[in-house]
Amino acid sequence: MRPMQQVYALRIVLGIVAAFLCLGYGFATGTISKDPNVNTNITILLNGMSIAIITYIASHYVMRRHYALIVEKPQKIFTMGIGVYFLSWIVFWVLFYTMIAGPP
Image 1 (spheres, rainbow, N blue to C red):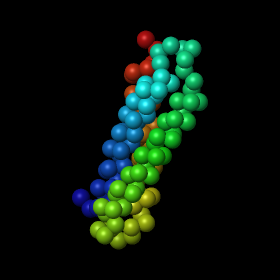
Image 2 (image 1 turned 180 degrees about the horizontal axis):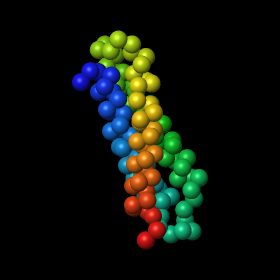
Image 3 (image 1 turned 60 degrees about the vertical axis):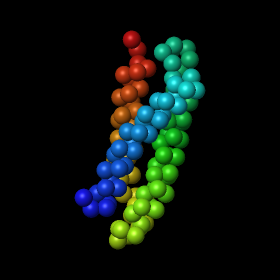
Image 4 (image 1 turned 135 degrees about the horizontal axis):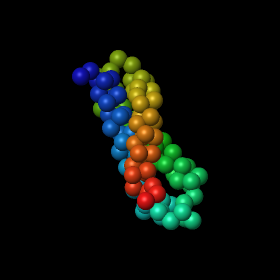
């Protein structure tokens, strides 16, 4: 695989990892619960979006160190796979959230 294809594939995997991080953080802080009186949807959404953005920015710095000398345009590392990252994050986050914390 070419380096930019590797970056693209890593963004998909990192989107799934970010979804797991969002769920883990939600359960650790108690914002995700099966009790309908505890859920505050806006808090869950803002926490999840923050974790996803922080994970994306952190992955950019890691990938830039590894791929900056290999690719033709190092500035493309930031934008390559941004759509698929956030799409895979939201799809898997909703999927896992529904499976784990959804109604019985």
